Image (tube, rainbow, N blue to C red; front, top):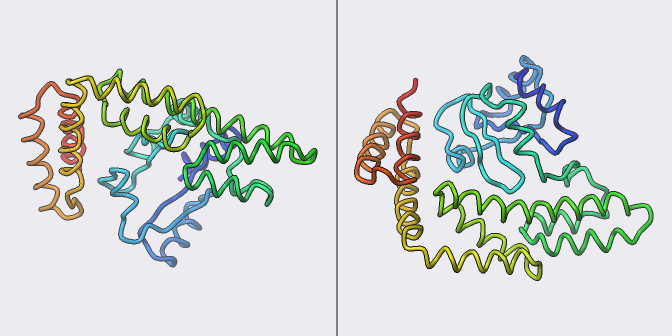
Length: 256
């Protein structure tokens, strides 16, 4: 797609990575790539498990994930603007881990395990080697920004009423940033959240909504069942953050 090609070429140096995902077989995929001149990488999503996890309800769709791992957009590929992509890329590593020298294999492995504190220590150790110093320092700085950005993202989610998102982000920081000051901060914020009765009530609603969103939605009858459940949920819990999400999802399902 020309739009995604353009974003890929323009923002790759700022940390944006574009990956095409398909549930089609190799033959149709290769033909599509050739016909459309796609210049970015691609992957196969057999069974559409990844698409469902991201909340994709139609094809074609694009999913924009920010540097903290949060899905910030799901919808038409043309709906992702350059400004949105730049904002999502803030705090991301400028060079993808898979393009780093082989000496960074352990760093990549630790990031894959969400052990950001360990990855930062490994990158700092590599910085002692003159030929790797610049790259290692840049990677360490980028990973630190990811940790700090996750805490800031959690704070922002709570401000907007997405308490389940905030809770999970704080829990992720506690797990991935052991020994860092952000771990201490996240623990304190999580305790405050647990003492907030309104927030805990909203979290229960959001978890109930997740069960609805996990319903099958590939067939017409499945979509109708989900739409009915979403409409009922939104009416029953009107005024809550979860109800707003349910209304938005229902609206998306109604579109052709």
